[in-house]
Length: 83
Image 1 (cartoon, helix red, strand yellow):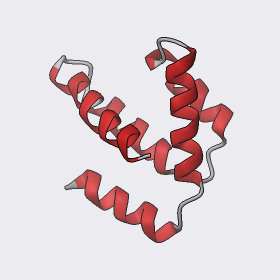
Image 2 (cartoon, helix red, strand yellow):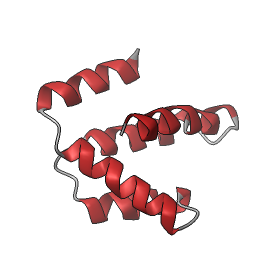
Image 3 (spheres, helix red, strand yellow):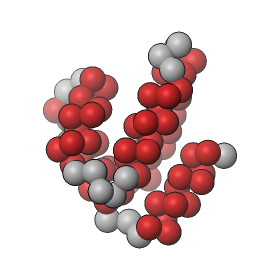
């Protein structure tokens, strides 16, 4: 989980610098932390960023871990992302 989070936090900001837009990063982070979003809906949302089945499986594991966290942990994660 920690490795996936680190990879996500280092890879997605590159879209901001590449001109893709920070709004996309903010949307992905918010949907990642949103406990009410189903796993299949999340995968459909990030489908354009998935290159192969291994990455999809890793993202599924990451989203499952986020969905299992307490609201306090998710709020702390949101606060960290704003910072």
